Image 1 (cartoon, rainbow, N blue to C red):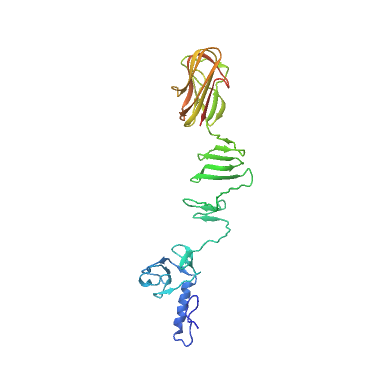
Image 2: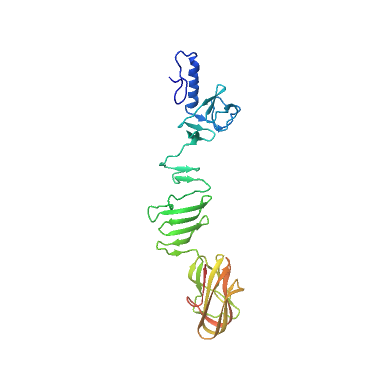
Length: 342
């Protein structure tokens, strides 16, 4: 008959054994350490003042009283170290790490997650809730391929619902991309209070940029005749998108055209004269800088046009500068200015 148990190595009380209480107490001490096993930490050197009953996992390279005891559990009991040899499958709560570990492959390992699991909520370094049932707090997240590729799927129940990615600053939405309330793909931006659609792609694949500055302007009425040296402007929009506005009035009639944002603009100017004694019409930036010039001859009805790409700044204004004498036709499709942010 063996003199100790197979798994925990607790000593048996043997026939005709003297001082049986010593053997019995030794078994009780082992049970006291191993039942609901709690280990303070894994370390190589024993602590200077261990608390009674405190257990430690002895690390490789053990020194001092623990020399030659690496891999065992050291339990401080009744003023001495008792050593217990862990076996595969033992579990212990490590108090310094707040982790439950299992002994396997001659070491204490994190208990692995199951291959399959269902969770109502899951927080990874974060707190999940009813709305955010998966919550992750991390410097980065990696979704890698298993095979040739990888897809992230965001599904919605019906066309009028939303399936999107929302980007926030301090928990306030600033950008959103996806299917927001319909089946068109859109990218929306916000300043924290107002949302605007920057890009819209229809289910048929047609792309529009609703906030892209684009305007075609004309002057109301039938005709206008500016005097030599005057500047004139425009009064009406045939196309109006992206914040192009009309500013202060000009001496030759109409209003300045105000640029909404910085950028490169495609600018096109067309003038149509009903009659002329020779004229020059110049498109001016801020009243002084010429960017397009059209020259007419003396005679009857005629038209000229010119197009160019120019860098303009938010707040710049455009006007027409006139030299010579002519009567220009007003109305849509006649004397017009078009600008488009490209």
